[in-house]
Length: 71
Image (tube, rainbow, N blue to C red; front, top):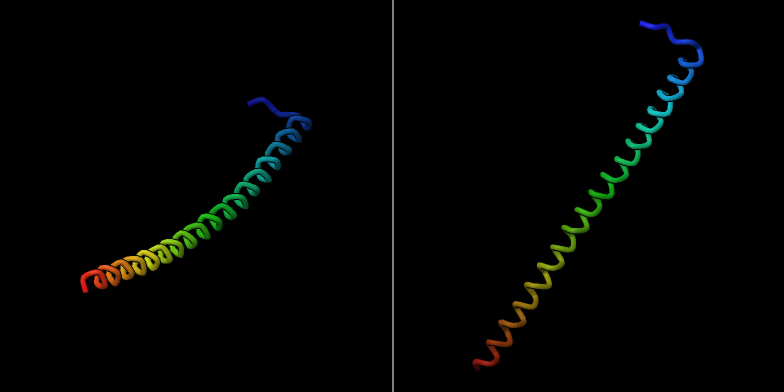
């Protein structure tokens, strides 16, 4: 195997440091994205519950109106 000189070693070390920094940034970004995903899932659940509640209220109103029609 050929020996690498000091300049090549420094270039390699610089690339490794750059890759480590890039990986750290990707990990941080990934953490943020996962948190946002969790937040969106929670909001979706809340909105689905609100939608179900509104649907039930509308169905109850329709039932009451139909009952009034048949009197």
